Amino acid sequence: MSFLMDTYRRLPVSFVYGKGVYLYDEKGKEYLDFVSGVAVNVLGHSDEDLTKALCGQATKLIHVSNLYQNPWQEEVAKLLVERFWTEAKVFFCNSGAEANEGAIKLLRRFFWERGEKRYRIITFRKGFHGRTFGAMSATAQEKIHIGFEPLLDGFDYADYNDINSVKALLKKETGGIMLEVIQGEGGINETDAEFLQEVQELCKKEGLLLIIDEVQTGIGRTGKFYSYEHFELQPDIITLAKGLGGGFPIGCVVAREEVAQSFKPGSHGSTFGGNPLACACAKVVIEKVSKLLDHVVEVGEYFKERLRPFGKVRGRGLMLGLELNKNCQDVVLKALEKGLLINCTAERVLRFVPPLIVQREHVDKAVEILGEVINTC
Image (tube, rainbow, N blue to C red):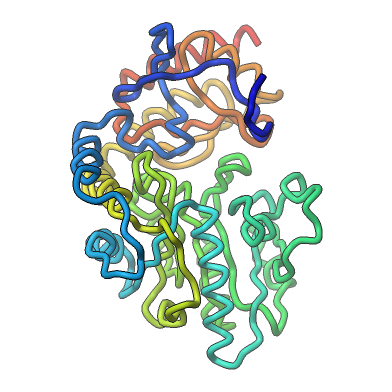
């Protein structure tokens, strides 16, 4: 009997420790981890520097209220802003959904302060922004909505890579456009560079805020620290989480200065957001990932080429998807039996988001197992 709510389809394995790109179950069996907590464990498992920072901070101070000065947040925020395209400020929270909720609130507050009733946000079909109410309402996937209606008003759903569908949704109440440059949960769907430029131009022309959801694509996952950098975008707001703490929960909203000023004391908050322990982890992750970007590009391209014989490959860096002509859940289960952890998303797409420290030999091993599994399924 389990005492847990049945919210996950859990695979038949339990891990007890990990090292580098490997996880180990209670019997000591080794598994090559190409899921990394769904793009979370960017430095792999039991990274020495991350572990040292985590344990060291835990002996000093784990939590302190945001009612007081927080030098740990200031330090991490500075590192994040230095990599942003312009002057900005940061709000810390605990997850991607929370970060997206914060971005939605910030947009509404920004226009409210200007006396404009612009609260609607255009998002995209097959996108995913989280499961809290605002984030879920922003997510244009019916399967996420079932049983939770009525949703939060204020979201209009456009077609990915179709600027005309975006323009058709513009209303006088429209305040912004929110998107992922690669849709993770939607099946590793890539945006066209031309489309993104058209979106940016539309935002500038209409006075809209551009929000880039970097929860899965950020922190070096695609070969740039922020994925929007591939397309020379200038977002007003970005959201981060997943890889930011390397496994420890932390998320944030980064907004350019003018927009960020709309949050005042009491307009938003988070009890645990940006606690000393989380920030100690994030600092290590930011510094180490910044040195891994060329490696992510190199190994990512190698991995992409190794996957091509199996079918259509999408994605950038170490955020790749392989589309199969059948449901991929059986492939995931067979791979698990052979010691390879992979993930099925959008029913037919195998998602690969390994730790950013993964090497070519790990890719070779994963591809070898994958070949055996696909041929037998």
